[in-house]
Amino acid sequence: MVAVTVEGLRKTYGDVVAVDDLSFAIEHGEVFALLGPNGAGKTTTVEILEGHRRRTAGRVAVLGHDPQARSRDLRERIGIVLQDAGFDEDFTVAELVRLHRSLYPRRLGAAAVIEQVGLAEKADARVKTLSGGQRRRLDLALGLVGDPDLLFLDEPTTGFDPSARRRAWVLVEGLRAMGKTALLTTHYLDEAEHLADRVAVLVHGRLVALGTPAELAARHRSAVVSFRLPDGAEAADLPTLDGTLTPEGAGWQLQTAQPTTVLHALTGWALARDLELPALTVRRPTLEDVYLALIGDEAAAEEAVGVPVASSPASSAPRGRR
Image 1 (cartoon, rainbow, N blue to C red):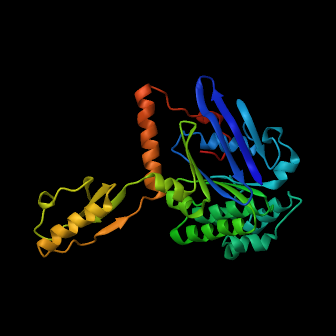
Image 2: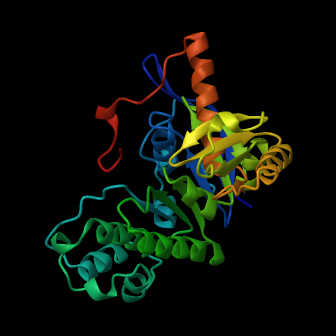
Image 3: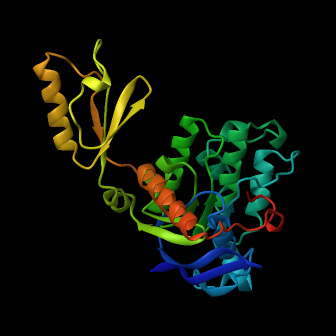
């Protein structure tokens, strides 16, 4: 079943095109990541899906509803985790979660949700005493307590330390196990690769890639060979290698479409001289590699034809969006 349908979505601000003929669908129980550089149209798209912004053209359905109608039934079935929710500083964590819980007909237990996001020890602490990472956990708690069918997660782990990020990842994975649907926006490409069933990449309001992280990585056919040179050896001493050799910290890396050939040449050269190549590794392309290639290729194409970068006016964005 489809939770979200977007067909030919377009949003303009005067002559500026923020979202340009965007189409995709999100399945029930799927974690779907929407990626793109600043000004790509991610926030505008998400706000249209949430019902906070009106579209210029196209069709949108969220849990069977047109979000533009702002129906009560839809609002009761979605949860929203903003980048900055703007809490009342004098509430305690438990008070704020209980208050938000009271707004929904279908609810999860306040104490259970506070425990789930790792704030049990701070349940009686006032919001103004929380660290940035703890506030983000509170954001998650408020988004979850209404037991939503669809959760919008806008940069959910910003400000988290590595341990807290991993805990948040487990929480999102648990949503999938519960049959919940999640739409994730993030600038952490490793987060999207770890959590998302599928990924959509936007550049200048247009969809430039859609698929699973593995499918997108497979499009990037090159691999990266990294190594350090042994003492006394220089890059000029190396054999001719198929790819682009660039310095990387104390070593070198080579991006190549022929990793087997490159490894054979490198190791043969080293063995012939009775040398070791410290830190010799080969890694497959990551989602980040593909993402950077996609936005780079698209930016170059835009520059070539003189198409302006689309972005929505900052003054028109609702509070809590960046």
